[in-house]
Length: 582
Image 1 (cartoon, one colour):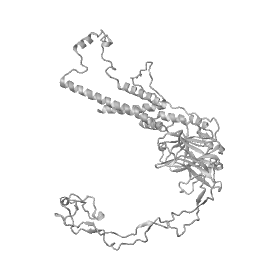
Image 2 (cartoon, helix red, strand yellow):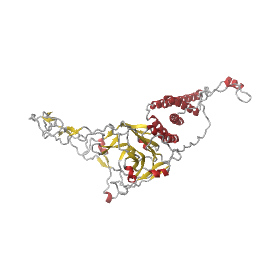
Image 3 (cartoon, rainbow, N blue to C red):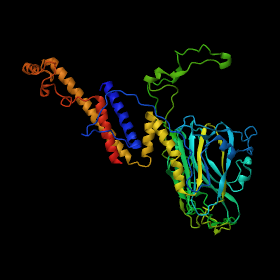
Image 4 (cartoon, rainbow, N blue to C red):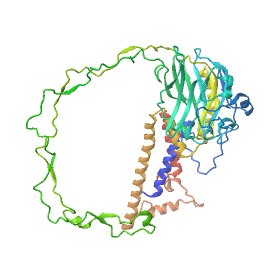
């Protein structure tokens, strides 16, 4: 197939992919006139530049414990406190929390005038926090927390998680550091190829008062792309009074489970444990098999016989070259110009195979081959039998766990009074925005509709290129894998039909041209003289055909459709099928 046809097919594939994404995101279909005929605009036109929406401060409609859209720099400076502490057990040069924070617009801002809290420094400790409007005390309503993160430069190694500080920590936020008590830690974290989305809560032992971290299981979804696509993503955590939890990214659940069953270590210890004071008796026999004590070595068993012998009957093959080595110095090798005998030693040419050995049976000193000794039996061992004294594998006895307790409602965590970011990062320009803590799922949804949803739509609309098409398709199929079957039908089938059409038309055209040259027969466009005269008689004074019935065959009759019209028709068909498939 000619190169231009291959390029046409590649262009058509890109057009199909673009059409599918546009149909999904915008719900658009090609416009039709009253008769159902697709209108094709032949003239080129310039696509008008999109105007970004202007930022509007999201408003809370309902109960909230903390909401922070970073509306102005003045409001931020009054509300947030940067830590002046130092990190323990860390080199003095990097121990201080001196990482820089700024409230500014992102480099690629989807909303005009929208500000965010930006982590600005690399390889430094950062700590900043803010007091909640009122403490959250886990009194029987859902705990809902969400915020936005945008890795403007991707993420190499570092965290973007939030610590929800336990009640009392708000009294001195200037001393906020890595050991400050927190109730929940939540958010993304990455180093190398290890991509994490933390949900950790600290549980208080009701018997001892000790605090232990409980880590939720890993997300089942693949979260790698959220660290590299440089888009704004919404991270949400919901903990319900029935001890269940959900972790979401961009509104899609990526992890869920029970506080009682899906965390490690478990909230409740086992009822029984192995007795630490129980010791295995000295006469306990754990051997399942033993050597037969009644067996004896046969009298004719000779352990002195070697396993192999030199073949006394072997003879050196005729033509064996005893004086020729298998490897010889390469006669074509040349000592390098920069070789220094004093520094590098005496130069020796590299060894190569000896050509004389190729045609001979062998080279070098000949030795008789070794054969297996038929008298060899090896060392005698008594056969193994079942141990009549076998008592099984010893285990210490089980006793009641003296530290056992049962917390049937781990949802009732330590109240939260402040929100903090205590982070180390090797990547800068991480944007945080639109923090919210509430006990009402509807409030959280309304907040995200007026903040993240608008950003997300703008970022999708302003992105372009094959990478954005790929990401959009992956996003579309993330929760609906059955759509891949639709892709296969609407993409693969048209390509196969077009390939067959192009190849068949190309072959027919070449066959006709070849036959015409060989036989001088009339081509399909050649007309008899009578038809030409009849057509000439129907030409009016202006040179136009007097009768449309006698004019040249229409484009439809000759199957001549412009490439642009063809692409528009294909796009219309795909979009129509796509809308019905949904």
